Length: 223
View 1: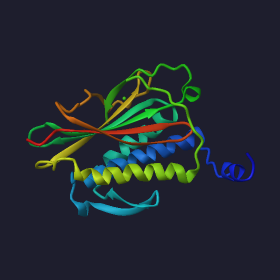
View 2: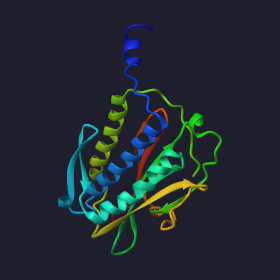
View 3: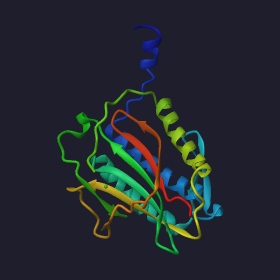
View 4: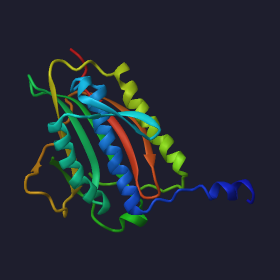
């Protein structure tokens, strides 16, 4: 019980609820950019390399894309801190046919002691299912970062099994927020934009003492 265990205990990085919310929102920001780059939704020259999570990450330098993501993240940050989010989804859609080709889903789980007795019925807004609790485990900062690194490596490796996207594509972000959430007037209700007859692949997850995020990608099989 003493010695090594006590030494490891001192390394545990216990994030506050606000700190954990910020970490999850930041993860969403880099996930969106990484998916857009890896799936070729925008040209490679429209991205800039930055260091994050001990990895080289690519973020969009296109003003329109940056503006859209910034608007989404600004509201998402507020909802995360208020425990209002159960899910964020990135949907890639064909510009030519309007068909949804890929759906990247990030489920947010909150422990019962943080969630309390609030009703987590939620619906998607364009611009969030019942939220399951999980039993939090204390982790070091490096353990959390390692879990996040694994997810980004899986996203990068997804090109090995995902069909090549046909033609020009666009994307939308859906955020599943609680029914009692304050929603900006410019945001709209949306359908879930599910992939018809799609394949699903569960990716890795990461967790802090306050949140757990599961990652899933659904995609349409090539004709």
